Amino acid sequence: MVSYCFFFMCFSILKEGISKNAPKKVCKTCEDIITLGESINDRIKSPSGLSEDFIEDIQICYESIEKIMDGIKVNNTICIHDFFKIKSTGGPAHLLLYPVSAAPLATFYEWDSFTTWQFRGLMKYTWVLWQDMEDYITEHHICNPSS
Image (cartoon, rainbow, N blue to C red):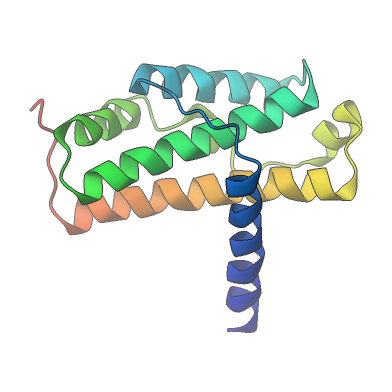
């Protein structure tokens, strides 16, 4: 119970940090989420680019998935369709690597302990959100509107 409470507290703090420092943008289409997930996946496997862009892209992906989840909860057909389209690709590509060792990334990007923690938290929080969305779809017997 203590570890669950600690986990919840840490990710509540992380989410608060995301909200305050949010890049203020989300992907416009599910195809953008798919492409962004693939880009993040590629940079996890072979680090490149700037650390700030990498972290921001993970935040954007999280916020975009959160927006879909919010839409699904109010029975938004477009969001439901987007979920199933992303799911048909196996889900967000970077989450297929979860859990991810942050060590090679921390070395490449020269992260301090906070940025390493932020990366781990964003990956975990996004993974949990995706799992929650899959569970919600299953529990509420929501079907693909395209089928």
